[in-house]
Image (tube, rainbow, N blue to C red):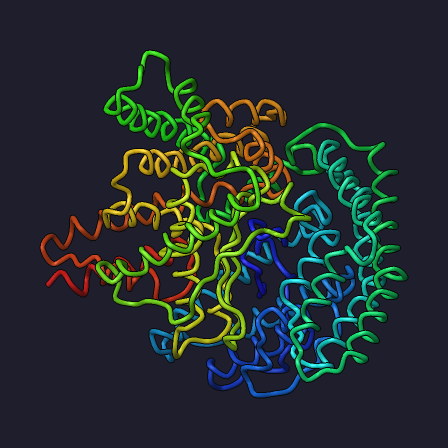
Length: 607
């Protein structure tokens, strides 16, 4: 099982995303409980207990009414990972022992999903150490300060002491990461040179930051300030302890990690794709299968991407023509000219950035008032709009989403990157909000978390093609609700879809066809009209997370295909709300399983 932070979009992994870690129980059940629901419950309990950071992120113990000290960090050693994999496979065998004929439909679906995920873990195990541990947009130098500042709640003196304990534990965890990074390097798995330069820049900047200005100190001080029942003397003492821990443990850990990369960069190359790894081609194929949950080949996906790029650009050109633009200039010129029109941007100052956040909130409120037209189920938990932390925004994606805590202590959060004002044209904001918040990621993930009578592991399963495919499909739903009537906002919607189609081309281009980083940047810039800062950040993201970028368009196309299949089969009996119920009310699914559920829906309603 994997407890996910839902993606590299979130600077954690990504995924997820980016993820906390594979959290298979380190204590395999001696025998399968008689009732499979007990197996599911025990499996999740033991899995989540293996990740202290996951317990903080989900607030799982608090949902059980149990007090818990959040004072430890995850064990990220290879030995621990190996132990967890061994136990995962033992639990896989126990899961197989349940006879499907004795299970309810709901239990059978849960078994199918868990078995699918465990089989994927088994297939990918040979490549367990292939993912870059420290990259320009994820890894300990970024994840550690993000995790503590954004997700470690400080509601009491004990919570504050736990925060300090985790600061003091950073050195040990960073050493565990370094051991694995060195083992990777010995195999030739080394971050590309342009990205390692950014890692070193991030590390040097973190070490050079005065402790009082360090994100970990600043946010801790703000959290303490919110504790009204703590004396000023206690707050001062805790701040002093945090300062000592950051100066004495955290910054030295940053420096040790950075200094190693300053040596490692001498062995780095400019090669962008994972084809350069031992058995790299097969590794990429395995990642494509995992991320898309299909058996599509890189060649098929590349060709779909090229066709979709042509189609979507054609639709955008029709809008340009209807708005009086000179279409003889061609798509590349027109889309880039549009991006240079000052009327589409906010002022490049604090006031302009504050207005962007406020306008995102208004967009989300508007769509929230309309979703009942096509959805029967809505999440109870709300979503907030926040700015991406400034220390990480230069290399972070344009936006990302983090899901709510299980105990309701933290809402869903739509993080907007405001580093480059030119990366936030007004005509693209609606679509971005629909994707990350409502009816996109927040809608789908919060609904999954609020499902009743499903095993807890299903609330945290993460199938990228489903999750990202839904968010891209959600952009289309908002258009169908009449929320993209402005022609320029519709260009923004199409441009966002185009961005995902281009991803099919550049991801397979770099990892399958041996494209260079520069080739991929050039293709994406010419074919999307996105700000160069966004393009570079995105291409470099695909370099470190092979196959993930394919999931969006593949998932969207599958959902649209299944919707059309249901419409064709049911005719007047088709109900868009019921179709969305089928898609949303089982949690995340492999696309093949989603198709099974839609087929069942069609059969039950065909009459």
